[in-house]
Figure (cartoon, rainbow, N blue to C red):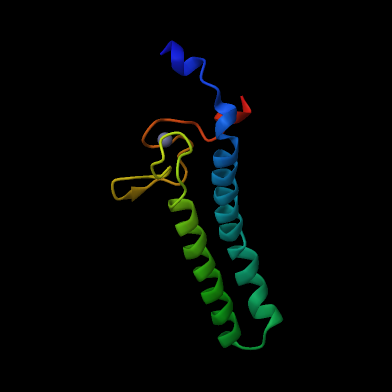
Length: 106
Ligand SMILES: [Zn+2]
């Protein structure tokens, strides 16, 4: 336990910042939904264009979700947010080794 307390987390900075960036991009894409669905019918004259906007948004959600899901832990090398079949994107610790996503900032 003493070794874990004195572990140098700065060597994980690059990997952890990449994971944080991917998580923020997923959150940003999700938050775009409400303004998009509110604005699309007002800016376009047809439901067809609104549907295209929704489909593009949905594809972006899928793509960013895959990016977040495939993010690997810089300490143990396993998938950071997936253990077994269940992805836990809101969890801030590696599901395998427990490395916190902000460990390099402390
Ligand atoms: Zn890990």
